[in-house]
Length: 290
Figure 1: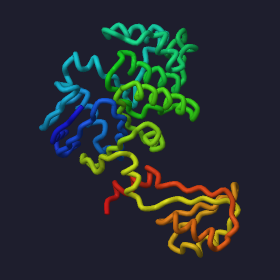
Figure 2 (figure 1 turned 60 degrees about the horizontal axis):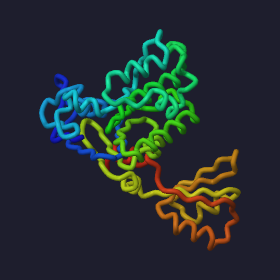
Figure 3 (figure 1 turned 90 degrees about the vertical axis):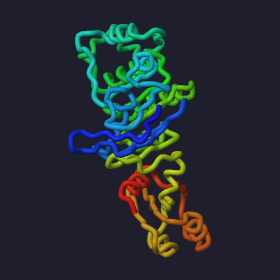
Figure 4 (figure 1 turned 120 degrees about the vertical axis):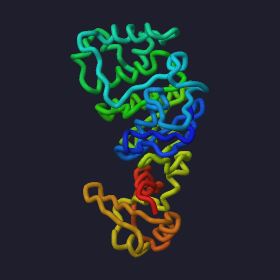
């Protein structure tokens, strides 16, 4: 999938401004951006749902509007609806009939935990259950590429974790996964590459680890430590206390130096953990600019 120097305008509004982007076979890519940044427009162009004002769009080496290529792509929009009177099993079989080599409905139901829903009418499903069915339908044609817009909206924490595991397995099996999500922990869980879009331009396109390194802060957490003593070790650090867990969280630019100072001063503490910047911090830094 690739777009080259693409511009897309809606009247006087420029939704995409000379965007170039390529996604290779087998990648897992997270696309981030504020509301109205151009994410959905970009994915719509890549899927052949819209035509660019100028520039070039290719899907699997050809025109994204070509039915042969569309057979090899699955997608789930942010908002989708299922036919309420039909049973889930009927929907799976109906959609499968549109593909030459579909995944058997029973196999798909097992993979996505839909076994108990097959005889249920779609109109009786909860929002989270409908979402699971919608995601499963994106894979029913055994696609080479799957585009998921906010895949876990409406799911609880357990449901999100279960779906993440299925998507990671599909990626390991060779499927190219492209995800947009407002849950940045979801992007961290699913994507190895992150593309940040804002105001129709690509601001970042790097491996996840490189995006995280754009923020030069680290987090040190300890329990049962004196916050004043920690502030004395690094006066420039941000120190916050969670009284419920007795955890002190320190945001510092040099975690190694802070930990050496913590040990060297003999400050009492328990349960030391160190982690890098979050994707949310990196996203804010990138979109705010210098």
